[in-house]
Image (cartoon, rainbow, N blue to C red; front, side, top):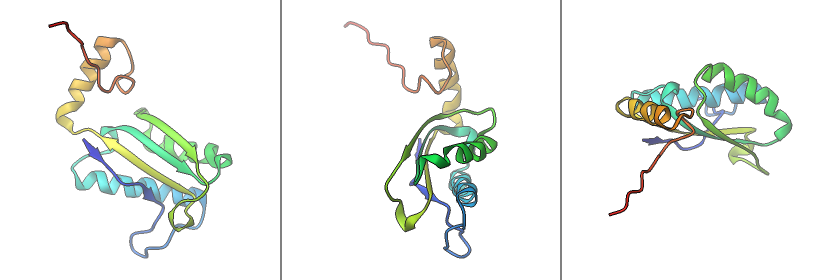
Length: 129
């Protein structure tokens, strides 16, 4: 598994925050993509995201942009409104991703339990000894 730190909408070349909610969301997601790429992973490897918004009224805009990145891949997601983010950012995104060798295991678990693959991350069979 790869657990990322929260990614803000910071532009790597300048260190400055992008100027708007939409721009910060795009940049935060691009930063997530970059972190995953450094581990030879992609957004399709993400099994869970945690998203923090400065204002929940921005959720619709955030979700529209988020959906463009994740398309048909729908990792489990939690989204919270928070009082303040580092650097007074408007959005922060952290992810948990699984390496390519384990995606087949998740698919098998999902098929076994008849649920979306991301609903059943860690199925455990408890057997009596």
